[in-house]
Image (cartoon, rainbow, N blue to C red; front, side, top):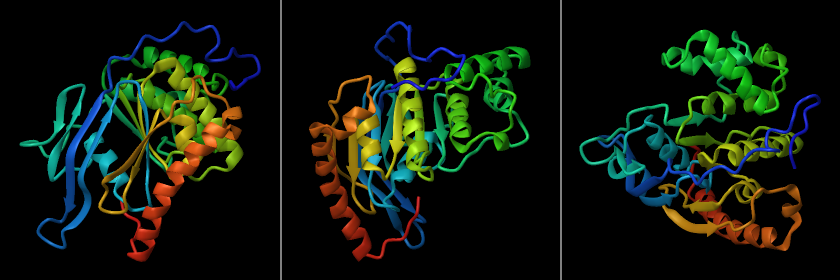
Length: 294
């Protein structure tokens, strides 16, 4: 189902098929992260390995505080790792001799809490990255920003400030701001967690339209199992802290996807399978008195 915006064409209709992606392959091998190694030695991630193909929508689910965000932050270059290695398209991001990845426009993060500049319009927010990086002039960056916003159904809102639009529109603009830099990987940390069910469903449609158009690799952290299956090609279930890979579930639902799939038998079987694995870890987290952390 596409989002219809009055007076604007659907962002997906009439587009030529996107070529098979060649960027965004992530290799996580035996990664361990220990916070405060000279103090209390809190192990957040323990010998965790994942292989994410270029152009794959990878969903990470597990109990609160299990270390999912720590793993995302290591890919982004916000946190170091203690051992193991992470590679992007074969190039070392972090590992032996380089505990912390360099931050770069090839990996863009959209956080759980909004990060738009409230004093800038949506178009100015979107144009900010290419401008400060010196990739585009202000005029060209704003022109591209308005084009990208129109693709996302926000063509009439480029001149609005974040406080003048809905939370869903603001969040959609954040995704556009991330994608204007043409990243290899989009890192999403529970971006729709605080939204009501209806807004969240619209945001899912919007993200799927973006994915169908760009085939960017997506590394997406969530607690919502329906969200994980509806959006993902693969769901990684991780353990309570320390984060280890518990189960990998391939989601073979056809694309493009629509909300009729949510009531299908195949979808419900996948929810049940993943729920069983997550529930086991949630019980362990509760019994150990685990507190939420990164």
